Image (cartoon, rainbow over all chains, first blue to last red; front, side, top):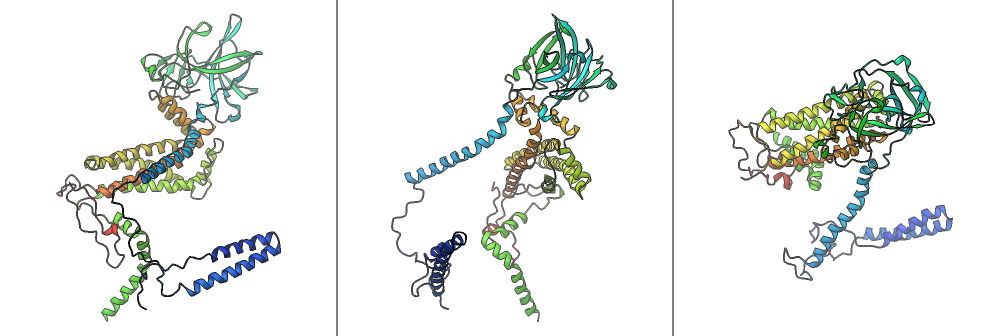
Length: 303
Length: 267
């Protein structure tokens, strides 16, 4: 077999419209099977006719004498541009490609990144928690109270607070309610004294079960993780914590104790119902509440 | 007689190698892989130089075992711990694969540090390999983050409180700390979404980043070559060898990359 020009290139068949007709015929046939028999029949005829024409084209090959592939010889229609020369159009196309690409990328990426980051900052309002009737909190006695902060996620939102009824102040019951979250890195602090587990009590409230256990934290509160220790008012005595323990706001509603928001404490002077509490907004563990170190945490995300 | 035998052998070899040749002609993959694997290294490189590939192997073990564990793990607060117990005690071979993943994590971290120590003591971080040291440090940080996020997944008391502490330590970073902690937790407190968030970070986000960084790390290793040890008689980073790497003749025509320039620092 003698070599012809273009033999080193793939032998492509001539361009042909027959496959298009064949495809239309097949589609008509399939649609006709669902719709009605004569559409199917018309489709079958179309497919047969065009299929035959297509097959005949392929079988006979390209017309002899002509090379299968158009020769690339001959002068180019326009002069080749010098290498490195740029045209306004190519520059525009490059800029448009980059710009549009960046725009499309941003449109796709930004909502996804926002979904990853934004929801954690929204709707962080803490639920108010009903801790049951005041009669469960005798005057000047400490209780460990365990409750679900968010009743819809009771398994993951259980929190513990140390509650003491300080008696009446100006005719209104006064409570000290200390969070058990250590102000060092957030481990649960333990009471320094006996826990009377036999006298444990379960109170059913709208927030699910609240567990109330009497305790005598004679030595204040101590953290098992790194040894931070606090007095009974939550002031830091020793160890790595940078401030005192956080406290809960509270309300008395229809003779029941209701927990409100958490707040951080700079310092508590005095004790019990006459204590002077220097409050600040809630901060994460390990974040100073006073002194120059507090300047490192000027803005808090919503808690 | 011997002549016909060798002819037959040649034919047989050509037939056997045909698929590889086919692949090579269309993709250059065979030559590329040979270029990657059969690089020249300094004559006195030894066992110390294997720490990098050992780390890579540990990472691949983590990838494979992690993918299998993900088939049985359920990242919801109510089910997570039970599903880990199920993998550990009920599933056939589960204890082994979880053990490989759990202990392999430590192996990966330890090997990273050993590899880092080797690179430091051999002075292999010096010009022109500074960028690869930086990429390596990024891999180390990303790998440690992988360890942090994976630690929460068994969702027992240790996992929970370790994560509380770790997130709060992040929270003490000046200015951005409180926001960093909120982003990590996906809220003001560790909540129902935190576990799934850590799971997604642990098995999709960070491994993806690690794979990309390791690819970059290896690219730089191949491009710059391996440093000879400090006690080597060969000058480190000497003149590049223009000889093409020995291609097994008749196996595959060496592709442009296999035969091509070995890019090494020329100064």
